[in-house]
Length: 476
Image (cartoon, rainbow, N blue to C red; front, side):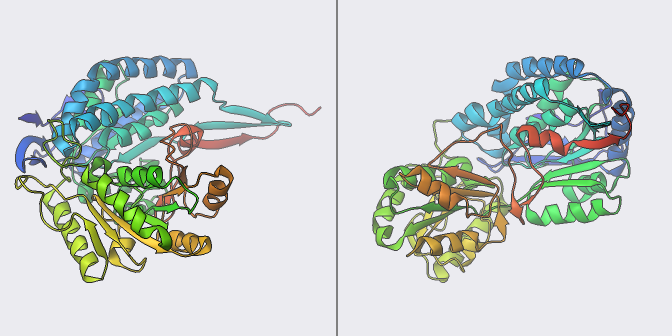
């Protein structure tokens, strides 16, 4: 039983202003596996005050000084990856292979990427007689999700610290353990007091307090579009910068000249990994109507290879995060059936033998219309909608007929063909022929998938202000 009842503020572990405990549920067992404290606006005020005070010195450190700290974080983080994997497995149900091999491990890679960018990053440029300086934006409030807990924390914290900002973090209260270990890592690495602060709590209380606080200069949220809108509304009162990485309903266009087995297999794997709980999952598979039957044979076989089970064993798929999420997925699966989509595999209820915990059957629908609820709403579970098309123009129209614009996928044996289709998709992060994640290029979305970018040089830009000094150099 994990007990994390203190917050990390100003370089010390401190008690909440008004102690209030929350049960943390292991989604694989539906039983309590630990407790955290829930914070308040008063705790956020303490953390922001510490961060604002620390910003005065941290923002003036040299690139070399910040690199030393980042290298120490990488060293300490590497030691704790196994422990982080165990925590993620317990808090959000990721199977062992995913929790250790990807979920925990990717966090340290964000810091390594930040180091590589910082080493070559130019904060000062001269333009004629003027100088342009990029300076840290200030105190950053981060609101992070439960589905990729360490990945999303590090994607924000690493570039922010590298840029010279200070941080107040509110992780998801549903999956809070890995964030506590992360704070221990930064403490052990000797990050100066106040540069990083952690307050646990609920979005409507602690998240709202971060977004509203007048001394928070920027707020970055990864979460639902609904939550992103609420944060933006609260932040608008103090005209602070807002960066949002929100929902998705990513199209996966399989062209007639694609390697069908590789394309369908990659698409199914992208949906089923992490139990479908990924914002850029390719949850709408668009296929030529003439190939629908062939695609469904492959899809059924691949989907049924994703056997749910105990995350601590050798299962390929774990549960979804909570009872509420399980119920939402069941409602949407039922909606798909009622609206006329045909089940290829999966469906309602829990997999046989997994009555405890929040397990979902890997589910594939065929003959889905893009107007159906399962094609419009972000399900956030292991559910795929296969949609037919007759022409490539129709496929592109369907792909873009969504409120979202985070991810996109295109498959063709002819790379030029894939490139031409990708260029017409209104989304920010597009993968050709199963290309994997790249931490060096900007990640983010169009439309209601948010604004701003994470990863790469563009992540640094989110945490910098521009100062122009005219007449800095004498005229020639």
